[in-house]
Amino acid sequence: MSRSARPLTSARVLHKIKALTTPQSTDYVVNRNPRNLERLRIAYKPGGYHLEKPGRSFWHTLEINTSGRYVSADVKHFENGIILSASTSEWAIKQQLYKTNDTAAFINLGRVLAHRCLQSGITEMTCNVDAVPGSKLQKLLQTLQDNGVSFKEPARLENTQPWDAERQEKPWDVSEQSLNTTEPPKTDK
Amino acid sequence: MSFSNLLMKSTANPGVFLTVTRQGHVLRGKPPGVARTLEQRLREETVTDVEVAARVNIGFPQLKESRSAQLKTRLEHLKAQRASKQLEQLARNNKLLIDLDKVQQIYVKTTGQHDLRLLADHYGVFEHLYGSAYFVPRVPLTINYQLGEGLLSPVHNGNVIKPAEALKAPEISFDGKIDPITGKTATGDTYWTLVATNPDAHYSQQATECLHWFIANIPNGQVKEGQVLAEYLPPFPPRGVGYQRMVFVLYKQDSRLDLSSYQLAEQDYANLEKRNFSTLDFYRQNQEQLTPAGLAFFQTNWDESLTQFYHNVLKLKEPVYEYDFPKAYLSDQKFFPLKQPFNLYMDKHRDQKVLNKEYLERKLAQTHPFEGPEQPLRYPNAHAIRDVPSWLRTEIRKRRLGQGRVQDY
Image (cartoon, rainbow over all chains, first blue to last red; front, side, top):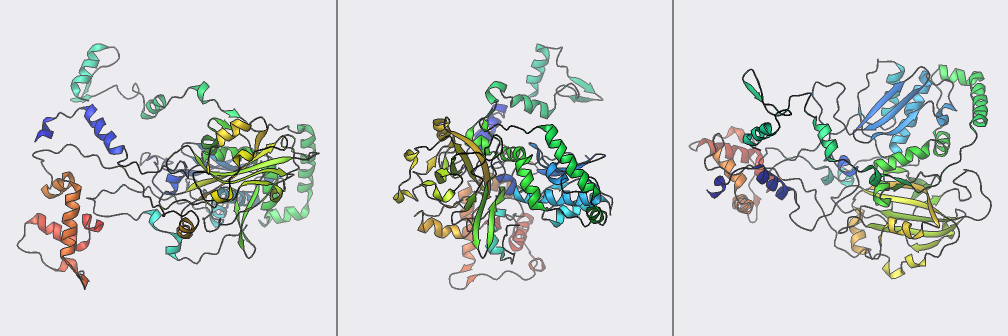
């Protein structure tokens, strides 16, 4: 075998990797939308370490900060940092509240953040917040979930090889019409 | 790569690199703590020149109103809130639900502008439209797609709208009398330009956008009275490319402008070549007269309605794409691979076309030309496989259970 005679150098490995990653044909398109691959579950997601707490394995995560007077909730991206936020110290919210850190404030903050999440198309995120059952914090998290935010982020799609036993269903093969759901149509609110 | 290289390095500058032996184990490279972490090394590799990457604000500045005057009215308002018995009752009973519309109205006038800028950066909008420039959207845009029966599909900042919902031009409204710098009502006529582009739609040139809608000289926010330079073309994300962005940018004009060089002829409505557009070039040419003031965008992906749209409107064969996953790295084939199942090992390194042919031929041999393929076994593991070598037994079992390569054919 002639191939085995060739020594395995780092240059050769690099050459092989380059050959594998260059597209075979010229007939390809690139979608520049940086959020596209996350929606398609292909994008890189940090793994973290399995004993690490809180975990680092997310695209988007929810962070809640409470101070003596205010409470704020932020959605954080693993690369871009805070991208969405709502706080009871904001004039838009504070204006209508009685107190800025009572249960009503927590619940309303959840409603506002959920509204902003839906407006910005970021509805799936992880949540590493530990809330005591029945607490204000837990009510905030519950309100977020009731208003259309999911705390389960889908796992990254594995790159299955032909010799693997199982094949994964590709998210883009499943269209909404084929699912035949009876969802109510979108409304303004 | 090899160990000899490392040894050579250690002799070249022994002060920096030492081969450590710890309990019989040789530690390669610098010890932890001295060596840089992967994150540090990646940061050094992707270093950017601060001067080159410096971003320019091309939007309107904002004159803030006097903090003391603002604080006075706000404190008065809050005092009245705290004094309200009714509000207290609602809050204490957890029944206080604030008006989200009102929150949104104040939000877009206050902190919402900066938040929208951050979110647009998260979606790469400024980077792909203006390169290193950005702007803070000062004029809130209200864009609604009419779905009939009083239903609306609003465009906010990144929500998903399906092409079937975006077939007709949306209704756009904004406060055309607003002065973006002071946020108050201005006197005199104002003119605006609205451009809707898709930065992800181009098939061959990555940096080019597709122009979907272009209205210039909108007087005082009356969008219907504007000069339509390019009629509305619905978004057409091809199957398999995922989510594309549709970006609406509102510019404020200094005066009436003659942008007729951008006029798209009626017969070119579906001519995608003519709809090539570069927001950066457009802005560079007209930056003396135009200032970006408003922004809204949504994401859209393929749905079944687009097949008809491609055939009837664009007169194109519908393109279908699939994500090209990177191929697995295989080490060079060995003459004598130890501890490898020979059949699977050979299959990985064989010509894939020959392999495909083999699998297809085997499948077709079991398919009756009129009656179709054989019925699958009801209990595939209940049938004994006798008098065959173990590798073939495994193969047959996998074939019966539909595991491995058989699924691809």
